[in-house]
Picture 1 (cartoon, rainbow, N blue to C red):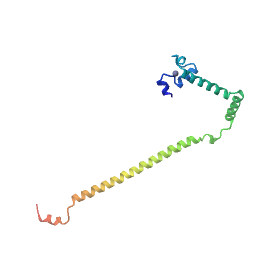
Picture 2: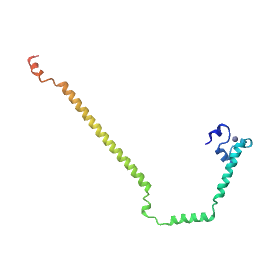
Picture 3: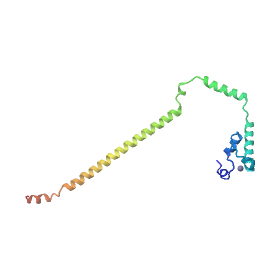
Picture 4: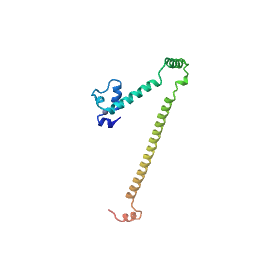
Length: 145
Ligand SMILES: [Zn+2]
């Protein structure tokens, strides 16, 4: 996260957080570095502010638990099992399959057409090679081999 800190041997943010939770590095850098110490104090101050902002009360937990139980005890309708996500993903997969099949069919048709064109060109070129001009045929009859 903090590349500059890693290069100058200051502790990274992750190392400072680890130190807050008592598992940080034990190289004693905090004793020597005022910058890291001030960063650590900012982090600890912010942590204390967050923990004081919204204390989780028993009332909140009880209300949350009641909500969960109410949802669990609701009757289960059949349309709840038809979850939109599953149908959406199945529909997307189906669309992909249909699209792929259509593209494959299109490709096969194009290949067949190109083969037919190639065959036609080959036939025509063969005919042009095989056939001799009609004017030559009577002349050929004059020469008996
Ligand atoms: Zn430092």
